[in-house]
Image 1 (cartoon, helix red, strand yellow):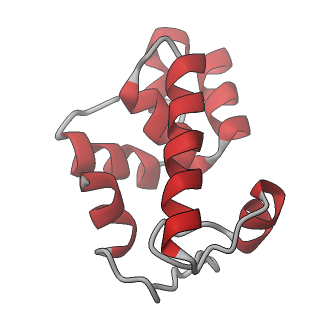
Image 2 (spheres, rainbow, N blue to C red):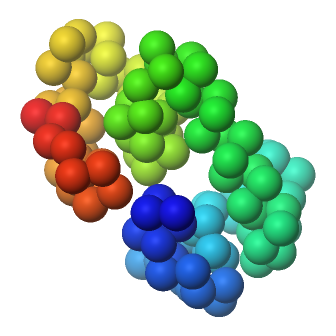
Length: 109
């Protein structure tokens, strides 16, 4: 629930500054790749939950890493893990560090 509140404040019509749309703030090209309509809350929430589950399972069941992947992307997270190792959180953008803090009250760097 904290994640969706942070993403859109539960606003179905939310638009982010970088082009994100809908309750889960998917970028249109990501939504297209997932085969969903990002403004349909049922499709968007289901896809967001599946995406988070994938990031969670692929990253040692670490919710902070899953959030980082969701926020800055899988490539960004992979780079942070490769370069930073145990200090991966210092390698993601500050906006992603803040995102994790706001959701989990946990510093990653």
